Length: 366
Image (cartoon, rainbow, N blue to C red; front, side):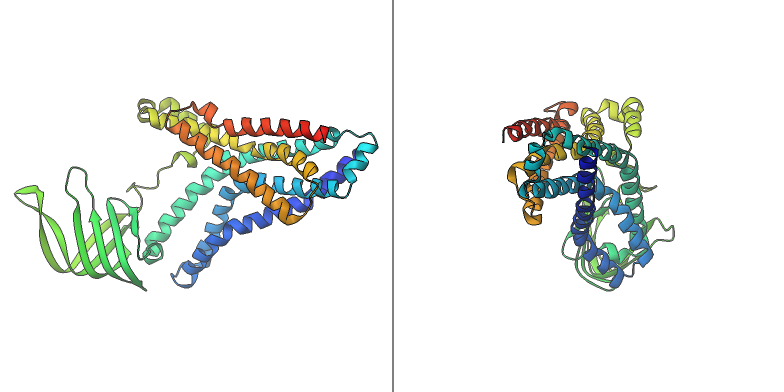
């Protein structure tokens, strides 16, 4: 029996590592094209790009680990069923649950590793990634600007740029929003952007345009000012001038619990409180997706009797897609106050576990 269990685990290892690599590559492909453009056309250094890629991987692994585990289980046990190895085990008097236990045990270990990854590594990598992006924007402003879309990543400003030719920006429209004041509109034929002397913000020099300026006698009234050159200084990346402040998803569970206990702004704001509570339950619940996926994958593989790569990957993507739809729905319900976070964020696991129990029972009768 021990030999058979070892054999099953060894058979799972190679497909798991292969699935891990392939799924990671699939999710990285879209970003690689953008990163290559930053390297070739925008002047961002190779070191900064490699650092950005490394910081992106922990965020992906939380999603990829359960997907790879499910795919490998479907491949290996589907192949066992297809080649009548499962039938041979049954004929030898071996109950399938005894074969499944080591696999489920390894899935539990992977889930605890996912919890460490999602709670400790992923928040730090996402926070450092956002800090790095902020630094890149300051060092290479043109690399962060994109023509033909509204850019809302600067504090108090919304930008529109028709064309970008190297460091030259053409057809610029800027909307400056200040609380309690009318929106100020600045239009320029062209401009150029550069880091400000403080290395924490941007300076935008505009040429040949108009600007809405407040009337000295009535600040609520604006009038048009024509200019040949116009310097717009201290454009800050993000919402905080002094630095990058952490979002809920960039905090560990301990930090979120501390915020719930001692942050008066969160305690007095029901929605902010629900968001923090939902993030805590999301981190824990999401970590155990690996176990849930393996429990579903084992009976599905044996009943389908298909060990082909395309079939296994397709079934895995379907299961993963449904699970994450439920997860997003649960998080929305929790944040909007329709369900308590501890119910809404654990509901996908509860439903999936119920489905796994049903499939296990059908498998025994199969």
